[in-house]
Length: 107
Image (cartoon, rainbow, N blue to C red):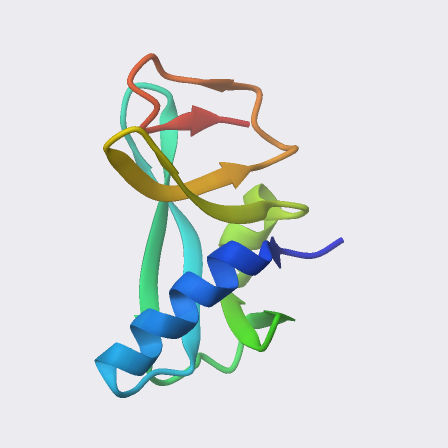
């Protein structure tokens, strides 16, 4: 399986990398936090880690560390707008539940 981006997410990331003026792609990972135990973390990658798994969609690279990959395998990252809010949406087949505020999840 892989980590995938929708075309909308890839275009959004590509615009921000261009505006930023540097970067190889986006790092997707998980961290322990929140009511349900885990939360997604995103950051730009200027220098990859040799152990990273790299996935490319629509010309945009997503870097995932080996520890996070176990929780993210098969995840699709989308970007959209709902009302006044906009942001990334994660479709993760490994999620068993999410907290009420939507900030964290369990696997």
